[in-house]
Amino acid sequence: MNASPADELLDVVDERDRVVGRLPRGEVYARGLRHRCVFVLVRDAGDRIFVHRRTASKAVFPSLYDMFVGGVVGAGEPYDAAALREAEEELGVTGLPRPEPVLSFLYDDGPGGRGSWWSRVYEVRCDLPVEPQAEEVAWHAFLPEAEVERRLGAWPWVPDGLAAWERLRAARGRGPGRG
Image 1 (cartoon, rainbow, N blue to C red):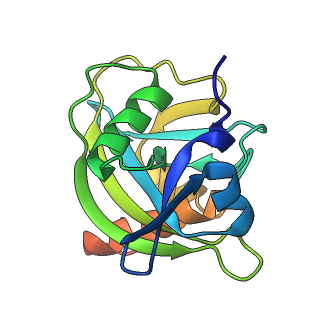
Image 2 (image 1 turned 90 degrees about the horizontal axis):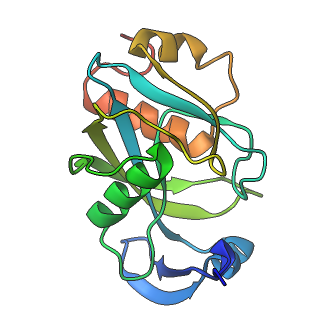
């Protein structure tokens, strides 16, 4: 019998990303405790970005669009290992190159939100045919970056993914919407 995702143990971290405890995911979410997440921007051989809509059954941000694959970092799991695991799981591939870390930031979901999480952003090239997890991904496509930019105001996006996108664009010196 498989354990529920709510039973998965997560590290609870402080404002400096130091581990201060370990609790089941369900409790971390219910109490809005700070934890760790990874965001992986996936590009194909044509430099297009993997974009998807989350399934309606997702516990966090159901049915919203995202330009990253990723998820929570398990208790004791290094960020780099979580990035590779999550990317391969969500894309339905094996043998993906190691995602390259780009930046880290503390995301805060704001008043009445789901709390905050340390977020590490990665990039990876995927030249493999993808078969996304049906439980995670309701729709997907590889889109040119200009198309992703055009869709930012039109589609409902996950707020933490938008925050990661904005930081990634700023780190590249292009800022949001500057191509």
